[in-house]
Length: 116
Ligand SMILES: [Zn+2]
Image (cartoon, rainbow, N blue to C red):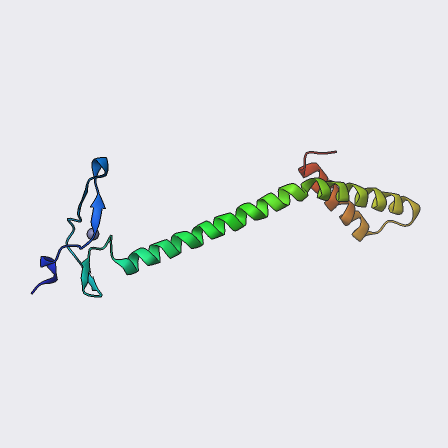
């Protein structure tokens, strides 16, 4: 007997919540029941796992952005303090390349934050 003769065993919801048997031709048999490609429990599980991992990744990225945004005022304040200290230190003693680089990096970060 050809697998094409089996119909999917799942029930689907139509308009107005009317339920009817899935009309798709079954492609796989799982534990004695036939399923179409859409309702194959293993494919569904794989799709759900993939979707869940995508959501988890998006959630982690949003959390990271939120943490960075909430820390931004403190980071900006820290940059300003660091810059002030470095500039006063540079005036008091000899200026070397690494201090100039640190000053430039701090100024750049502060400017990028849209602050002076
Ligand atoms: Zn189906």
